Picture 1 (cartoon, helix red, strand yellow):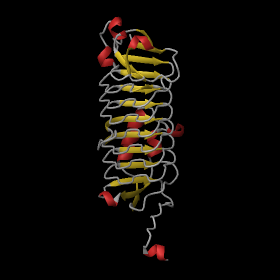
Picture 2 (cartoon, helix red, strand yellow; picture 1 turned 90 degrees about the horizontal axis):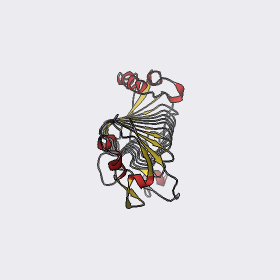
Picture 3 (cartoon, rainbow, N blue to C red; picture 1 turned 90 degrees about the vertical axis):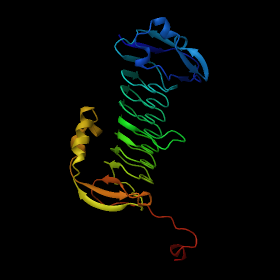
Picture 4 (cartoon, helix red, strand yellow; picture 1 turned 60 degrees about the horizontal axis):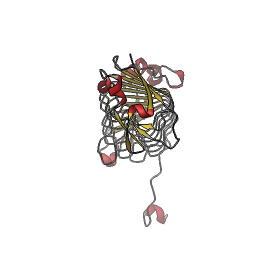
Length: 294
């Protein structure tokens, strides 16, 4: 049966770090041993059973989280197998450095969702914060593999320094999506914020909503129907991704305008959007330049 964590009523300022409480660690432990597992509450060590109501034992490889987990951080961190289901919102760093398994959030997620994730699947019904699938501070690589689906909006720096994997956002995203991207694919079904793809080395950013402001360091390519789009659409469709109620395969079908860049970082990345006028970002005018003189 699953291990059920029931969030107890505590002071609103209380924050909990739940790293290490994953199915592959708790499965097979006796209830008393599970209750004594260490967690950090406002930076201090506490027993899991002192801050959560517990029942079950995760013998089926599943942990269910009930209550308000918006101030519970690092849920699913380093998970290698099994399943965690959060019946509501979740805090920062959910799914950080996951290598396998399934994390499902029936609400919103905080910043750093799927940071440096290497495998597995994360599905968020609501919106996410900044730095989804991005690199942690001081690291050169973000998400390295796996699948992340966010049903709603995302904040800034989605997919920053992403190395591999697939990130699909059903709503809008903030500034600098795919910043310094190394490889992988980011799909944004609605509007993409400014500075998308800046310093991108490789990888793909697919903007399915309004035509984005493509940076001036990208060069216009062809209008065509990439053969990999139906493959991505099939994978997302099987995972339940339906932006605007449209099947993912249908959403990604048809022709796309391709842009190559960032040419200042090698020019091997690409931005796709539906054909139409492109509102390219204006290059800055530097003091003393010929443009400034005019």
